Length: 525
Image 1: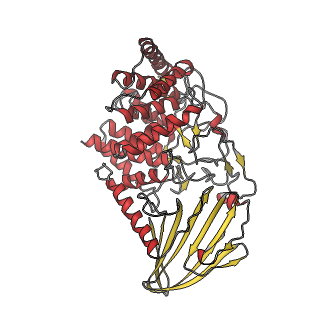
Image 2: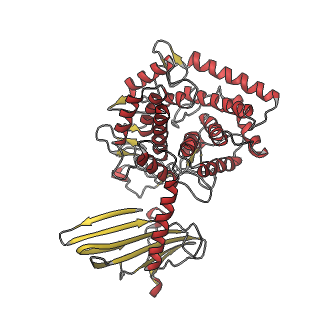
Image 3: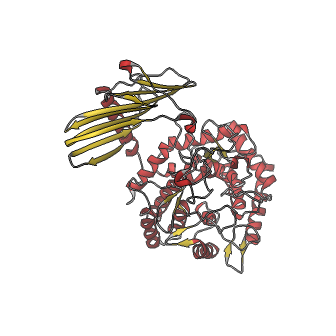
């Protein structure tokens, strides 16, 4: 629910925006509706309504059709948008326009109901709209009331949990990275990507955030979606899938659109799905470990799938890839990718030890042997003794903020001397004003991107885990200052101005906030 107050010279009005939730099925309602209620609060306020529908990325112009008392409809293909309001509308070209003057206590409604391939439902207004508003308020209050985080940052944690819920496709449990495409990471440059997909990269940390806040049902739904979606490419995993589990996400440019702040190209689809990204095996296994901890055995099919992922890791961990950041260019031996391969095998062995997954003796020996080999490679080639730090790639000399996750996932203790010195060098090279870039520039794409939001929260997680609570809380409060007025974060933060950059709101950033707040609270306890 969003309330916005407008104050004018002649009076004030309140606008309420929501997407109604019907969890009880007590009446026939649209599955997808945006409902707006505008109410005069004092004096008189003139309200202008304008609706100009341009579907298919503004490649179609639609002429709304009047349906008498049933409102207006916009139709294209098997899709229909039903427009119903108690404000008188008329066509102006292909747009619908209307004006009304509201006095104190007067209320008007506007409903947009979208349907694809199903019978359209006309959403009634008046008291029926008020019922939908009341039901939605009650549903969200009940859902947020179940948040189990009780620390000092509860409002921010609940706001982030709500954001993850809003980014969840209800019918499958999939969580999209962001609901937008082509909001630029560098204004006016080409760092514009489509984030309306589900990244396996985010799986482990997202599952942990949901579980830590008490939303076990959402965590299990997300895990179930992952195990289902990955069947199409199993035993190898794809970087991302859409909410239906589809694997072909071909990237196209929409040349007729100018882009946000003249930042071209505007892209739909994401060719990163073609990349090899080895860290995702550790993410999926980490998600399974978190969701299943102390909760019995995996079913036979899920156990078979996870074991297959371990086999792939044993075959491929020594190969090069595109890293957690999906760098477009030559494949490299990224240290963090090796760390997550280690995490995949370590997690499978822990599931076996806990009785959740029964592995044959030969598999236990294979996974243990390869886990040790990966660790040896990381410690001998992924740590640069001259720098006193783990490095972005094996035998390298650059740092990468993803290395902070080595402590977050349990590969190394946050207080380990190697982790402390890595933390220090990352902040020396990538830090500014309490924010962190994700890596030293080497991707060859034009434009300097902003600080990566979740990396700042990873640093806080490290501080909390090594017991430096004062520093962790100072940095956490500093990171909170970069949220917008609704407590939301984009993917990145402009270091100079503090403005949001990249797609918005970004699930990964809110996952980082939750996990950092939980780490602080656990350290305090």
